Image (cartoon, rainbow, N blue to C red):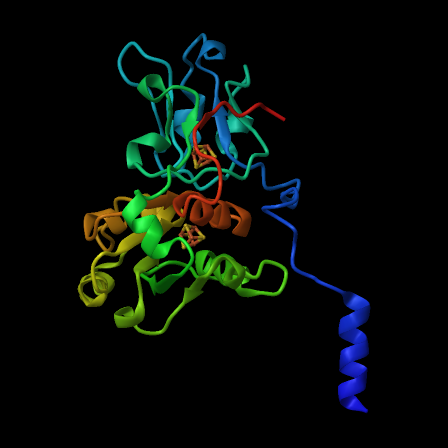
Length: 268
Ligand code: SF4
Ligand code: SF4
């Protein structure tokens, strides 16, 4: 009887995994805001209000240039948006933010207003990992929110396994690391040893502001300000924490499952 009830329930519910990426992506919650956009032309008087309110020093003003906003340092608190009278910084509602190079996360100034989204791995690595990617997750001193939003990808709604991506318990069984947290001094050796234990060729994915640049802990003596101080990083996924859709987008781009290229996000 129990088995019949279960089967009937399953048949009634149908497939609960989202259609994305074949169908449209799920909408971000209203309060999320997505990636930010910097419009240097609107920043006319150079008041610096955004620089003053930013808790992670993500905004700078290089000499004789418009403001630069580092999405890798950003914790998406939106304080700069509220502080900016002429609306030079705006949310885009766009979940796509993952990049291959750290410098590509800097918007405005020399970085331009466009985000250069992550390109796929080279052909050799795509052949190896494109249909089967095993990752060891390393939590290196974060608050657990990045881990939670990564974990969501294993639920029925997201079903990361349909892309051949799985998390494994041992680095010896992994093709790479997915790192969260700012890399506390206490985790530095563990991270090095875990990296050493992954057989080559291997990749590293930094998830969240902490793993990219230290996040809210940036500059503290207890942390190393991100994973790339210890290991080479192949994919940077911003957010605090990144929405699961942002993480999935980055993973699929890395594996060549989504189109790559520049984009100019439009404000909401
Ligand atoms: S949204 Fe990002 S750039 Fe703006 S103040 Fe907050 S942390 Fe700084
Ligand atoms: S990036 Fe934000 S959410 Fe992720 S571990 Fe750091 S503080 Fe927590």
